[in-house]
Length: 252
Image 1 (cartoon, rainbow, N blue to C red):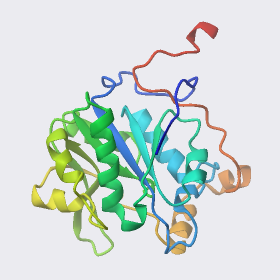
Image 2: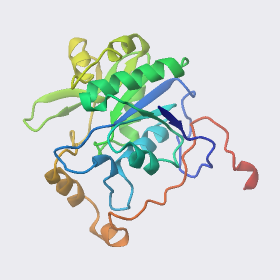
Image 3: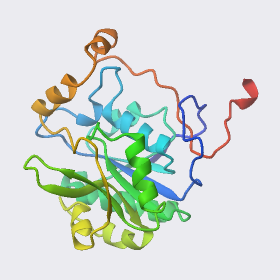
C-alpha cells in the first residue's frame, strides 16, 4: 500500500543547486517495532518537537534525493501522519515483522517499479539522528550520484570499523537488494563488494534502547527543552521535491 504526499507549498531550504530530479532515489527505513525501546522510535521527538522519522525524511529531501520513499510497518498510521506535510511517498511493508532485510527489499522493489530514471538508491534509517545534509551530500557525490556504490564508515561500540548505511547503491545492485530477507540488511552486500566510503563524523549513533534515548536527549540544548517539550507538535512547513517549481512563487 502506498500513500503519496504532493503539491505542498515549500518553506524549507533545499540545495542551492539540486541534483537532477530522479537521479538519486531514497528509501527511509521506518518500519521496525522498537521492541527494545518499548515505544515507536520513529515517533520520538527532539527538543523542538520534530519526530525522528520526520527529521530523517526532511534531511533526505534537503540533500537532494527524489523520490523519497518512507517504508513503514509498525505504527504505520501514526508514522504516516507525522510526515504528512512532507513531499514523500509512504510504502507499507506488510512483512515488516520479518526484519530490516524485508523492508529494504520491499522499498527497493517499489523504487525499481516507480522510479525508472533513478541511477542510484540511497538507503537510510530513521533512528540515526546524527545524520545531516552535509553527510548525505558527501555520500551522494562520492557515489557520483548513483553511478557507483558508496557507504558510510564509522566505529561501533567496540571501536571496530564498520561500513554501513546510509549508503548509495547503483541500479546494478538493486536485484541483490530486492532479494534480502529477514534481519539481513544491506551490510552483507557492502561486505561482499567493498564500496567507496565517507566517514561519519562522530561515529554512528542509533537509538534502540531507553538508555540511547537518554544519551541522545542529553546532547540537546537544555534551553530548547524549555521552549518546546518533547510532546509538542513540530510546526515545520512542507518540503517540496528538489528541482520542481515553487507553487507559491506567484504569491510572493
